[in-house]
Image (tube, rainbow, N blue to C red; front, top):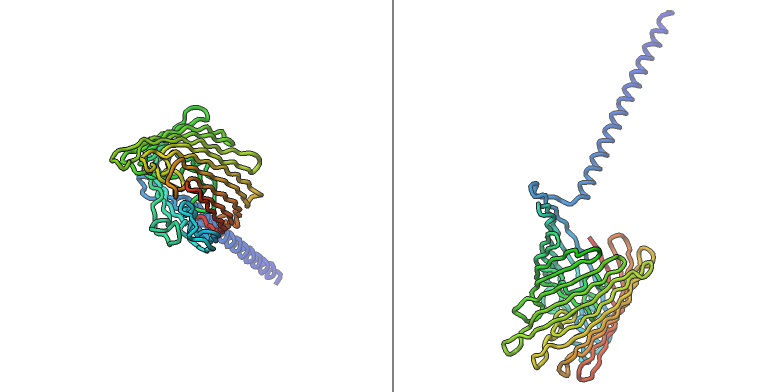
Length: 381
């Protein structure tokens, strides 16, 4: 009897130790499994955040980008439609108040990147829905090709913003058409951008003309960028067809700047002068007058943007354009005022409101004006 209790106690102790060891092993196994699950989830998360790769030999990656944008528009005085492009045809025949809504500005793009022995080869294809008749006025849109190009180093081949345009100094408006007085075109081109020295860079391009021409245009640009100051000058030369079966030489130049004025404040401004280059300005127009001579045109804009905190941006932009000659009912001058506020609701979604006032004066002395309130919702992806 004296030995039974110690033996029983020892057996119980061994059993308890075995149970403890088994429990410890079980906990260790569960911990290892949990760590493995976490590692698997983290690896999946990292893989999901990386660009999708296809073609193991080429190592090509692609990126889908774009945004959804819905605009709700109220015009007073004249129905401009889905954009303010109707400003160039504004008269007294359509006086009243009008409401329109559109999603035509919604944009989708695809970029690819491939590493080659010559450097990084990139491609871009971008569409929106401002295709089709009357899409800029009141009609629903159809798919339209915006950009389609290939890049290698500073070389670009395909359709892209014209090198004549001061793209880096372009003011932001909720309205799709933009500011009166700015060069604007997307053209098929072969362009090359290169560093000159220090903060200077250059660009040369051969582009398909945006006017009525069978010849290309030649464009050259030089820029000085110190960030917070950008200065840029560009020049364009080409020809347009006249009614006699011949051609007329056309030319123009643009001077632009972007400057950081104080904390959160950015100034954009530009001046354009030329003869026969109305087709390269945002509201288009005739390049030649009724005598077949190039029309002299001057245009300018200035815009100020101010960020307030991290989510709110306020903007005020004025644009002006003047033609030297034209028929009595043709446009002598256009002006535009944009006042807008844009608020970032969440990381990918913003809302905005904009007031627009536009005027059109004719060579006959008539003057017309219109007011617009536009609200927008934009989701970026």
